[in-house]
Amino acid sequence: MIELKEITTKKGMKAFVKFPFSLYKKNPYWVPPIINDEVKNLDKNINPVFKHAEAHYFLAYQNNKIVGRVAAIINWNEVKGQQIKKMRFGWFDVVDDLEVSKVLLNKVNEIGKQHQLQFIEGPAGFSNLDKVGVLTEGFEHIGTMITWYNHSYYKTHLEKLGYVKAKEWLENYMLYKNIDPNDFNRLSKIVAKRYQLKTLRFTKTKQILEYADKMFDLFNLSYENLASFVPISEEQKKYFKEKFIGLINPEYIVFIADKNDELVCFAITMPSFSKALQKANGKLFPFGFYHLLKAKKQSKDVIFYLIGIHPEYQNKGVTAMIFEQYYTIFGERGIKKLIRTPELEENTAIKQLWKHMQPVTHKRRRTYKKDIV
Image 1: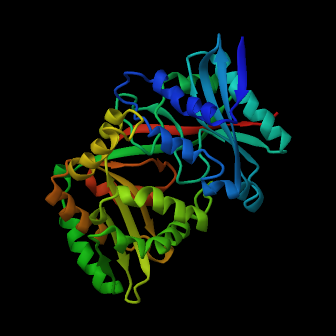
Image 2 (image 1 turned 90 degrees about the vertical axis):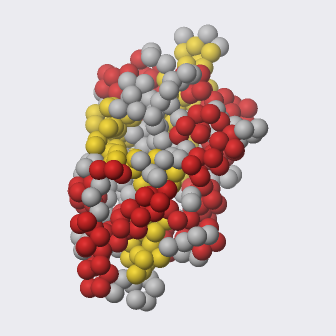
Image 3 (image 1 turned 120 degrees about the horizontal axis):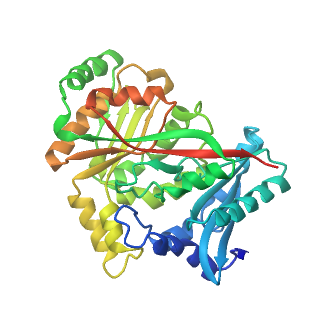
């Protein structure tokens, strides 16, 4: 018999966060979160997303042992502001038992029904800056700190329970040695002169913070037409600045501005912390912080985390200026591999950015949906 418990205590939340540590024990591709950071991220009193969202956390037990977890999420900006009657589910992890998945997802359906929502979709986080999707291809590649990893049977469970593909994401990598800089170096100079643009480079985190709010505004503007996009709020801007900016090498952030110092394009890359997080195994102390600091300075893999372009400058070659800078920076750092975070399959504009860099699609992931009954 499977027993379902809603998590309402700190002790329960730690158990919720730590369940994947046993599920993926000794798996060389799973990247664990820092436990305390993950607990804070799910805390309704800390994460500002809960000003316009709500979540219920559940653990499934069998013979007094945890066998599954799920977060049932409603983003009210999405439901009320965009009139998308969607019930989200995320932080979905289960043993290979279809009945466990059924019990967990039935609870999500029940909550959606209580709120008169129309369909369930997931796995997805609270907003567009959270992790998303079930991995369907690429199980033999190490994950990143900003993606979920899962066993191959997740897809099978969802499809057997009547869930169908909602959206698909692709993940790509590019080898630095295969990139020919001639095209974007040439185009960069033409674009900069034609539109009177300049590149902003940084050496200190403090310098970045002066532009951070403008960057998030540009991010909202860049992606507002994509399916399921929910804008980042003022509170979330503050939260993400505090949570992530310190992890990023200042020189890995590049902005392009016009003659009036208004941002027209930005890109954020960060060192890969995957192996460092595996060594940390969920804890910053006593040695986890050391592993992360070492990766920040020495990692030869970088993650393209975010890129945003003002709609007026899209398809005008502005990103050539970004790539010219990164090619120089990464060459100086001895970077070997550039890894793209998940990109929506339907986002043809973003695909065009990478076509000259010989990208290799090494992972696919998708969200699944089902009508609420």
